[in-house]
Length: 249
Ligand SMILES: NC(=O)c1ccc[n+]([C@@H]2O[C@H](COP(=O)([O-])OP(=O)(O)OC[C@H]3O[C@@H](n4cnc5c(N)ncnc54)[C@H](O)[C@@H]3O)[C@@H](O)[C@H]2O)c1
Picture 1 (cartoon, rainbow, N blue to C red):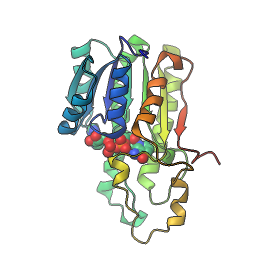
Picture 2 (picture 1 turned 180 degrees about the vertical axis):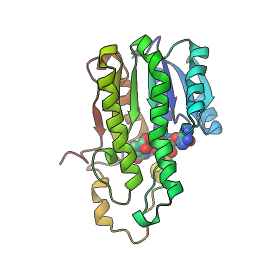
Picture 3 (picture 1 turned 135 degrees about the vertical axis):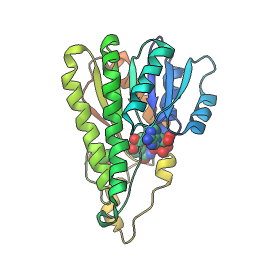
Picture 4 (picture 1 turned 90 degrees about the vertical axis):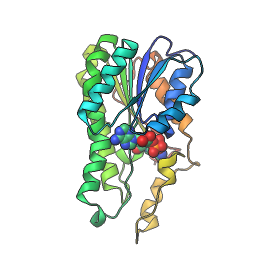
């Protein structure tokens, strides 16, 4: 399948997990890919896993820094001359009792999970208008329903869903599509670090566990590759859950 032949994609969070799987999948489908992350050694590892024929560049990016976001997009224009697809996948989790969340932790999760998505969308949009391109933002089922002990994660992922819908409306007349993907539990380094907070009631976390087993990053990447392709020409403003039925009931 070469749905992305000739297109250029910028992927944040490309050093690990879902971002890495997405970068590989888009390259397998013919895209040139700008791999972006704060973790340069992880990016090098992703680079070594890319299809040999792929056109790929690595760019250090801290999504919490607006200048860094603008620089990543500008570098993509220098290296590839265009931008068709922006995948905002960088993110962190924070599972804590409300009383234990420090102001620094709150600001950090907002800075990475929400501000970073906004900065990247704003920097990329003029170029996406040129190519009638599209954005895929990585939200979560935690952006669709409440998840105990995840105030910061739910708040930021819910905001990413609504940011995506708002931009989908604002740019519908300009041919730019904006969608959000909402995975349930995915087997990645992020979910491997999951720890129940002290004194937590496991029953309250019940809905976090899907009807099926955990999904793999490649399964989420497949959905991103579809949403970012011309096959999804008529799909914009959706929050696409991939969750083994977690949010079905
Ligand atoms: N794994 C899951 O179960 C799951 C479920 C739903 C949604 N998600 C979302 O998917 C996305 C990817 O998660 P993952 O599971 O692949 O996690 P991961 O930890 O494997 O990858 C996240 C990547 O984001 C990068 N990152 C963190 N802070 C950054 C910053 N300031 N600037 C640039 N890059 C930064 C990290 O270096 C890392 O490479 C996240 O947005 C996460 O919230 C994950």
